[in-house]
Length: 66
Image 1: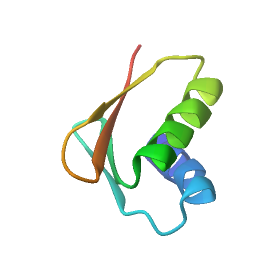
Image 2 (image 1 turned 135 degrees about the vertical axis):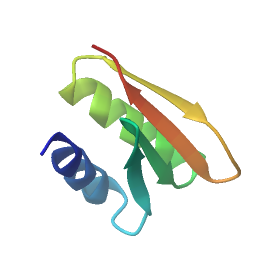
Image 3 (image 1 turned 90 degrees about the horizontal axis):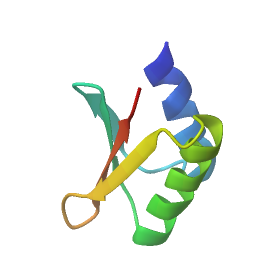
């Protein structure tokens, strides 16, 4: 359920960006600008308990911190 809610938020920002969860980490293929927008939205919703990292050319990883 959590993963589905997060992906719905991502789709509001970048509807065509491929995204998936692996071992609790969200991966999104997008531009640097959109990656920042996603981070800001997730940080707002999840009370700054999100970190993100640029992992490949167009891929970003988002980790949720307890």
